[in-house]
Image 1 (cartoon, rainbow, N blue to C red):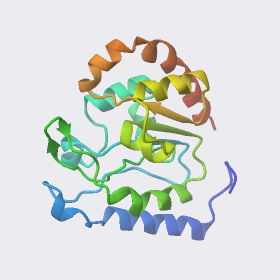
Image 2 (image 1 turned 90 degrees about the vertical axis):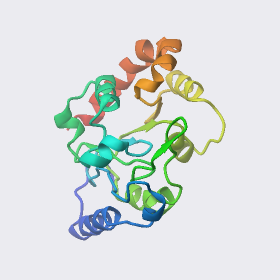
Image 3 (image 1 turned 180 degrees about the horizontal axis):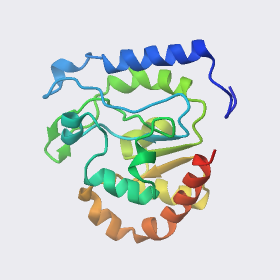
Image 4 (image 1 turned 120 degrees about the vertical axis):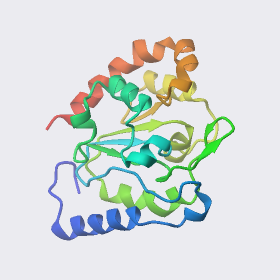
Length: 204
């Protein structure tokens, strides 16, 4: 289907079944400290895809992604409000791991490796209206870009030199404040370009 095409009824039914099955997934439950609670936001008509890492503890409790300081900073980066951000027909949020993985020695653990191979391709095949993909953090960047080397700064600078529809971003967590201070060009030079492209992608 081309961008802007209507979604056939049978195709939409398949997507609805995919959403139901993914929300009911319990494959990793024995390995998750707080149990399985898949948290994501998606729609076959979404125009923006946020490929994030995994839900945090706050999201696990509320069932809502990015309702924390990281989410506030991300919305500020993108210059969009909560109404747009939490509208699944405009913005899809698909973390690499759908469930909270627990705490490690340096913040949250990595997304469970079982999740992306099980669900990601199926979702992406149904989301043909996506115009812009935002890759938050190294796990999303490695999966979508197919790269095993290259820092977030390197990938972001490379994008700024040749902007495209797939945009690597640092994680908006307050834990990254030092990174943002060292790379002031991200907020000064890169964010204005991202905001312009995001506004264009969201236009009807």
